Length: 233
Ligand SMILES: Cc1cc2nc3c(=O)[nH]c(=O)nc-3n(C[C@H](O)[C@H](O)[C@H](O)COP(=O)(O)OP(=O)(O)OC[C@H]3O[C@@H](n4cnc5c(N)ncnc54)[C@H](O)[C@@H]3O)c2cc1C
Image (cartoon, rainbow, N blue to C red; front, side):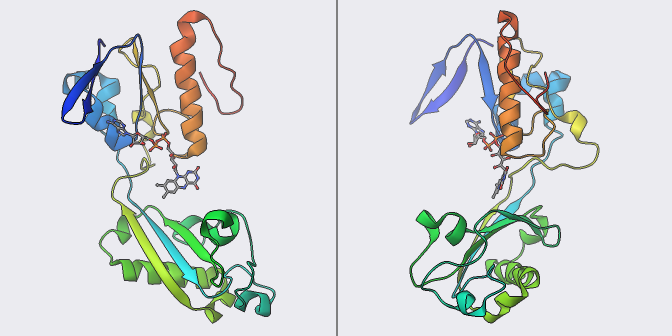
């Protein structure tokens, strides 16, 4: 690889370097690769990977959704009450969620208001055709199922953001198509959660892929990137 053409306002710049590292998501790397590289299996396999849609829903309440024990604390809005960390569930369409007013109060606590629940619906395929109102009601129902005492509260505001192409879709049989960080092009490397690493598409997976890419780039120098656990190179 001899250069990288990047857009610069109305024009274009060519970036020349010794080594190139593409740390994209799946839709991004599919756009970035030159079509002629698809004759190489590593790169062609990348086009077999799909991205999954996700829908992020925020719901504001007039009380505290995760305060399950104390009805008075749940219904007041003088101070925050409930669980102040990230939550996981296998019993809802959102596996990962939090009350942002509690877990990130500097940005999301509002005096006189209650919980700001943020839930991420993934895989989001069934939600793409739904209206934002219906998606919010679906999320609300599942919040009520997880926290029955929250049925006493009123939803005061909601917002829905749909991303049509987001995380790598972890379908059975697809793992073999994920590329290694080292590619058949000697000075071109890949990083990103979708590349080969043992975590799901996640912050941890992205970090491990970056370390593995660094190790692949530095291999000729003899330098060893320190890695433990699922770090593999
Ligand atoms: C709503 C949501 C909630 C999530 N919650 C969690 C969570 O709670 N915990 C967790 O661990 N993970 C979570 N994830 C997953 C996590 O965000 C991703 O796994 C992680 O960000 C992947 O990192 P990455 O560096 O591989 O890719 P990304 O963070 O997607 O970065 C890729 C970057 O490349 C850029 N790019 C793409 N194409 C090009 C191009 N051609 N030229 C230049 N730039 C390009 C993109 O704009 C993007 O900035 C969540 C994801 C979403 C969408």
